[in-house]
Image (cartoon, rainbow, N blue to C red; front, side, top):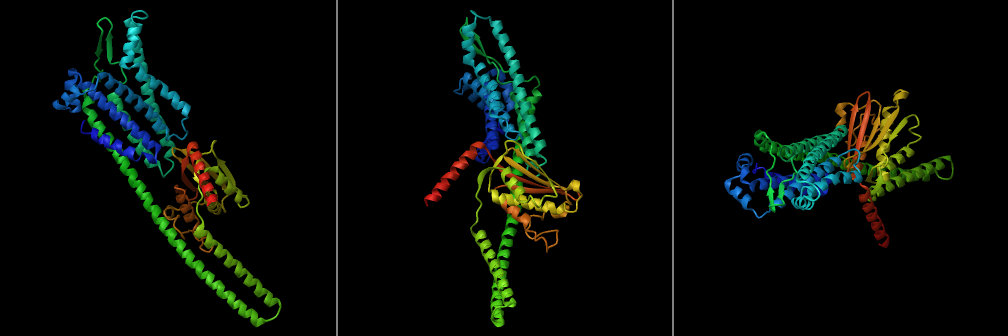
Length: 520
C-alpha cells in the first residue's frame, strides 16, 4: 500500500494547485489530505507497538527498515493519536461540505456550523491529555473507574453512529444532486465521475479508519502510569489484504475522472472555438456585405441626383426622388450606426439576479407573445450571475421568438413556454422550453452555426442562435439544446453563479472602475 500513498499525495497536491478555480476542488483536496494524514498517522501508531509487526508488514507492505524508523521516529504517541482524531474530524466534515457544494438547495451556514459541533468535540473528548486530566480529577472522589469506562464505552458507540451518519448523509446528498443534475446534459457526465470518486474514497475510509477517533490510552492513578492501547482492528484479515487494491481502484477512478473531465472540457472548448471561428467569419462576411450595400446605395443616390437634375423644377416626380434619396440617407445612417456599435460595443457585466434580463425580455416581447402562455418558475432568492442585462435579454428574446415560430400552427393548449431558473452547484441554470414542432436529431449539432437554418432563407438567415452562443460564451457560460420532433425543444443555459459575498466584491470593484473612469 505504501506504493500508492505517493500517488495519493501527488493527486492531493494537484487538486490544491487547481483549487482556485472551484471551491469544490478545494474541499476535495482538503478531504484527500485529511485521509492521507489519517493513514500515515495510523501506520505510525501501529509502528510504535511490536504487537502489530506482522499486521503492518503483511497488510501495508512495510519493510523492516521502515518499521525501525516508525518505532524510533521522534513523535510522541499522544501527538500521533491527536493527528488521527483531528484528521478523522476534518475528513468527515469536509465530506459534508464537499457534497453540500453540489446540492441543488444550498446548505446554510447555520446547518454546517451545527454539523461541525459534534465533530469538534471528538478530538477534545478523545485527547490523551484531556482523558488523563478528567480521570485524575474525577476518580475516585466523584465517580468510579467503572463509571468512566462505561461513559467512554457509550461515547464510543455514539461517536461511531454519528460518524457513520455523516458518511451516509454526505453520500446521499451527492447522489441526490446527481439525480437532479443528470438532466442537464452539459454536466451530467462530470457529476457521475464525481459521485463515483467520492463513493470510492468513503469506502476506503470505512474499511480502514471508521473506528477513529477512539480512546487509545489507559491511566492508572495508583501507579502513576499511562498505557497506550492497541487499535481494535477488523476481525477479517482479508479486508486488510484487499485494502491496497481498493485504494488502487479509488486512485484509478479519481484519475480517470480527472482525465475524462479534462478531455470533455477540451472537446467543449474545441467545439466552441469552431463555432466562434464560424461566427467571426460570418461577421466578416456580413461586414463585407454591408460595405457592398453601402456603396450600392451611394451609387443609387448619385443616380437619383442626376435624374432629379434631368427632371428639373418642382413636381411630383422630383418630390418622389427626394423622398427616395432621404430613405437612402436613413439606411446609410443605420449602417454607420451598426458599424460603430460592432466596433466599440462591449459587454458590461454586473452581478445581477438571473430573472432581471428574463423579465426584461418578456416585457419587450409582451405584444408578440400574447397568443402564448408563459409559465415562469423562479426560486426565491433568485441566483445571481455576472450578466449584461441588455445582451442577455436578447438571448432570451431570440429563444422566445424561435419557439413562437415553432408553435405558430400548434393547437392552443400547446402554445406554451416554460421558463425555469435553478441553482445547481456553482451554476445558475436557465431553461427555456417550447412545445412546438421540435428539431430533428441530424440538425441539433448545427443549429449554433451561422447562416444554418431549416426555415425559408428569405424569412430567416440563421444568425440568431449563433449570436446567442457568442453572447453566452462571452458570459463564461454554456448553452445546450435538447429536442424531440413533434413534442418541443428545450434550451439550457448555464452561467457561473455569484455568491452574495462575491457579488458585494464585484459591485465594489465596479464602483471603483466607474470612479476611475469619471476621474479620467
